[in-house]
Image (tube, rainbow over all chains, first blue to last red; front, side, top):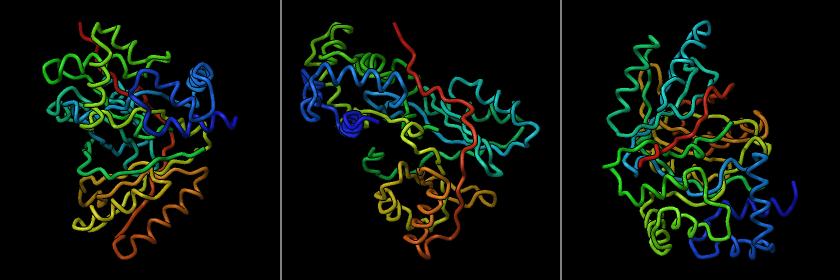
Length: 147
Length: 176
C-alpha cells in the first residue's frame, strides 16, 4: 500500500471535522490537495480497502433494538438453518464459527420489542434453541488498525 | 471478515421514534458521507434546510453518542488482519466493569462487551474481539489477555469464524 494511503486511512480513523470544507482540512494534515484526497478516498472505497466512510450510527440510541444471538446447529442441517436466519431482513450479519454454538448472528430491529419476536420466529422455524446474548455493557476501545 | 463495528448498528426505525430531520440525515449518510468538497452542504441541499442546521444536528448526534464517530472503516482482510477470533471469558461478575476498561485499552482489541451467561451451556460473560494476521498471532494475544486477567480468568475459549453467511449491514428504510 502507498504511504499516502496509509496516512489517509490512519487519519480518517480519527474524528472527521464537521465544517464547511472538511476534506480540505484533512487533506492539509496529510499534505494533499482536497482533490487528491477525494480521489484517493474514492479509490480506497472502490477497491474495498475501506468498507465505508461516514458517520457510524449507534442503533440503540436511535431507538432500535440490537442483539447478538447464537445457535448450535448440526452440520447436516446447517444450510437450511442459515437460509432461515438469513431470510430475516433484521439479520444484519451472520457468521459460522468453530464451536458447538456454530452460528452467530446480529439482529437489528426497528423497535426493542421486535428482537424477542424475531428470535422466537427463528427458534420456531429452525427448531433449535436460540441463545440471546445482548450486550449488557460496552467497553471503550481506542483507535485500531494503524496501517 | 468484518468486525462487528462496521456493523454499527443502524436499523429500520419507526417514524415516531426519531426526529424527522435527524432521520433524514441518517438516511442520507448511512451509506457514507458524500465525497464532495462540501459534504454537509450537499446533505443540506438534499433535505432543503440550511447547512448550519445539518452541522448542528450532526454535532448533537455526536455529542449524545447517536453517532459514534465520523470516519473510515478499514477492511481488516485487505489490511492483512485475516484471523479474527471472538474470545469469550468467564470472569467474576463483580469484576467485569474493571476488567473491561483494562482489556479494552489493548491495541489489538476492537470490541469488548459484557454479555449474559447461559448456564450450564455457556459460562462466558465477557467477549473480546481479537484481530491478527494469523491464528497464532490471535492466540498470542489471547494468552496476553489471560496473563493480564490472572486468577480472574476462570475459563476462556476462542471462536474463529469460518464463513460469513450474511453481511448486509443495517439499513434505515427510506420514508417519504
